[in-house]
Image (cartoon, rainbow over all chains, first blue to last red):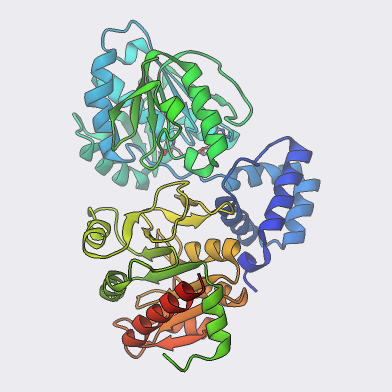
Length: 274
Length: 205
Ligand SMILES: C[S@@+](CC[C@H](N)C(=O)[O-])C[C@H]1O[C@@H](n2cnc3c(N)ncnc32)[C@H](O)[C@@H]1O
């Protein structure tokens, strides 16, 4: 019988509980339907039964590292949703051009493609020298990739297309060096970046930012956790700072939405006004 | 459709949600079916069709204007309401949560498809169990077969377009091979069963 049919939502709940007890990671606020799909995927990849999955989680902390990597969705691209980056270039960066310091927080940055896209925009608008970009995620493995800034060269075709669609100034190849089948992001773009672990569920404000971008992360959370995280972002933004969400993510709660103005309705970009 | 067997009538009576999936060759029939659903239609409807994110789609808008039901693209964490048809957005799987809300998921495609019919059928069945009616139409890959099989296993009602009349047989045929499908119907019969769903469920309300 397919694993999907064996892994009931009750079992998903049990596994969430196990992970909380053994490792202190709380997935209680995550969308159950997505979590179930991820767990089924892990079981298929590793050829595990429900019983194996539970006992591996309990007994094998190395396995848990892999579990943590796979339980979240990590897919990302440079200049993903070209319209979003166009809007950032046209509606957000001009506003910040007179700021002496621009601090960007990319929460749930995965392997760094989104952060480097921001770095490129800032560079092109001649703001990079005054900027600092923090990339955070719960996943140490994706952060390691982000730090290195080395990507599969085959992915650069899609990335370049996105970049062009976003209203590019140069060509994406100006920003990396191709070596064998790898694309290595220029070190000048890595200079003002820092990647570190931060869990949106349990960690708190750590700095004050002019831009916070958290895209394609909130859809995996339930409404309560979304509100909690959005409040954390509100607290972490400087007055008149910008909040960027994914194309399917928005400020739902009216009390919070009132404290922002909408900069771009389709791209879900907001500015803190209160 | 007056000769429905009691087991099937019972499943229709139980139903709390209608799922429709289709791909290549399935679009026209989905369009016609949705256009004909009456305002009183008692179930919320989730629709998954394979479509590319490259093209701006106006299907929802068209159906919303021309049909009697509210038709929209599903939003993340939106509450499912009857009288509404929700389309899976291009590039996202459409899932169902236990509190009766929808969620979107950008994880890997299934059978090269995102949205995938399997993903929606499976997630809806997890929440609605036997109270699901799932309809699978024409399509060129095997997406939907596992979903149909799961709905069937949890005792929901499964309806598959007769491969003989489907524009592209692969999808309905795969489902028939994989699952013990309740009804294999031609287009007219599928429209007929929509009327039956409407009648059975509205009279008991
Ligand atoms: C789909 S990726 C999004 C990557 C990028 N922001 C983009 O839009 O392309 C989601 C990321 O969120 C991270 N994530 C999930 N839960 C998190 C949490 N509680 N705190 C921080 N990051 C989290 C995952 O590890 C994953 O790397």
